[in-house]
Length: 317
Ligand code: AHR
Image (cartoon, rainbow, N blue to C red; front, side, top):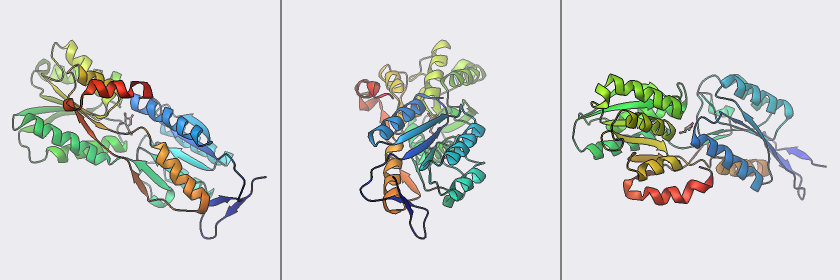
């Protein structure tokens, strides 16, 4: 029988030597609003399977109340850890306190919360502000001093990537007086909303003729917007430059067709580093860094987008 031992002064649990046992981890996923999100789910399942972890998966359908209910259910079941990709940044204190009280470590995946850092074990994610800065700096170089009116498609309102990617982009273009964000609205990280909101931007901006560039907080919204630009009779990538974030296969297809210009990569493998941190914690109580940062890489037309598409199209993202 499995024996668990409390390490003095910490909430860590160790397994009695010689006994291998499957750990149970609850994963509260936001939903499947984007190709990137679906890929993160696939990779998390794969990573759990490779490590013999029993993953209990819960899809919140974009609702924070569903995520909070899922976390409470995981706590009631006495899981060994919880992974959560928090849909918005606020409103987590109570449930995180309940998890802490139950001595269940919580790891945040890809998005941050406003709660006290002591309420979760660690967070795995990218520097979301830097992603926006990279996109902004790319545009500054790309337009090389020419006047540029930018429209922005924001992610889900109140989510940390929407807040940080907006801030980062504004920092990236700061000082470039030739660049101005003329419209900015949420597209909720989805392709359908991205298209819809872009249609309204095009209408409001002289059929799109007054827009020089689109900055989208994710690739899915950019792909939807590209469709809207084409339907308005303009050439995305040429008449309106397109820069976005995620680096999913579909944006490389668009780049290969000359319809998108640049994307900043967000790896969908957040679970690998999360499970590594949990393994060390379960083993001997090793406390990970509070933030485990993944890399953000800029891809442009110079990176042979067709080849990148071919490489990753079968990887599930
Ligand atoms: O939190 C990461 C963001 O959430 C991704 O960029 C986006 O595609 C997703 O839905």
